[in-house]
View 1 (tube, helix red, strand yellow):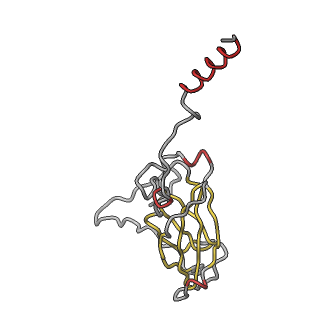
View 2 (cartoon, rainbow, N blue to C red; view 1 turned 180 degrees about the vertical axis):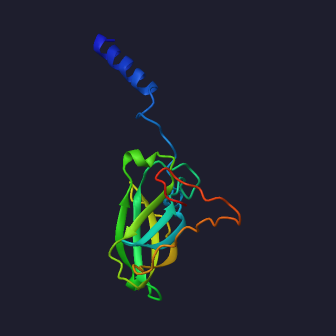
Length: 173
């Protein structure tokens, strides 16, 4: 046998004993298993600049695995009583790499284009960097009421016979 033939057979034997490819191989998941869970605790409130939505972001896929590729949220708005054909995407909240791994799960977004004294219905959809989308959270209704003042914190009333306290500026409380 020639030396080249022997080297070729040795190279084939070594190549055949090595596993193909590299990296972490996991089973292929059906799309329903890697779809993000929907946001939770969706709420809407009027603020001086518009309707502010708040929600808790998902941390797992619908299949139960821990999600690490959350890319953001789509915010959809429709008039109250309107059908799906009247729904418009009014915003997108993107999540950067640093925010993706934060422990804080509460997020907010404000609809600054809301028309005063108009009732809206909002939905929020989570999406991953691969383009998988959750089912929508909501609907939740919100109204932009810029003329309604924010509720004040109740002031403590002094009990009868209490001595008023004086702060450093000298004024009574």
